[in-house]
Image (tube, rainbow, N blue to C red; front, side, top):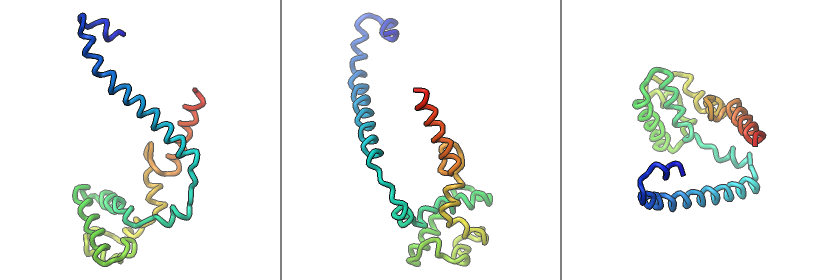
Length: 152
């Protein structure tokens, strides 16, 4: 109402065009909440299937992050990581099964500790920023959500 109060007479007709998309969004959000409720209420977590679906290719970004920590600019590390993925595909072998020598052949800045990159648990725990995947970060997110729910 305050928005309409300050505009000249008959200009409020322009606002009618913005109401329809707003109502569409409200309906979409409502539908999304219903879908999410259905998904979460019937969710059945299968840890064995989750572990079986892990793939070393998921750790390509960790390769890039490794080189960034070694001082290599990310724009380079992205391409180096891509070459490692391409080598693994060429050799028809998972990335984590490439030898140190093969990795060193892709880029001389790889050191012996590169093989530690292929640890899924470490990969998850490295992301400890707010909203990250580390256990401490997830526990903090859960705590915040619980506090928000309790306030309502």
